Image (cartoon, rainbow, N blue to C red):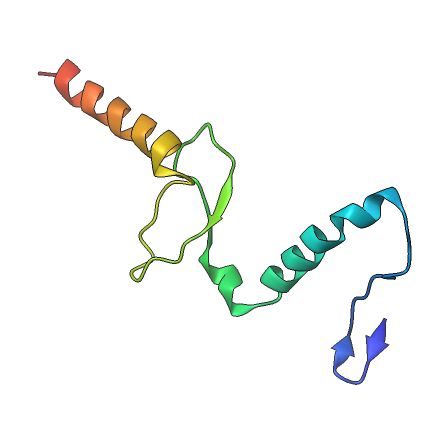
Length: 86
């Protein structure tokens, strides 16, 4: 809906619909996409993973959605490739 500052997006808080359960997720996504933090959204470095994450490290160096899953998997793959060529 138009406002003095441009456009404003609103949800009808009184609606009791099945999709109203998604309202907090949708509001959070819109807030992120319209903020400066959007520049820190990254895709996981694992080519078979399509998760996105918010890189909040000081030097913007985070590479994986989770170290315990994708990060470990990628490190094991690199380790095996290095030792296979020896």
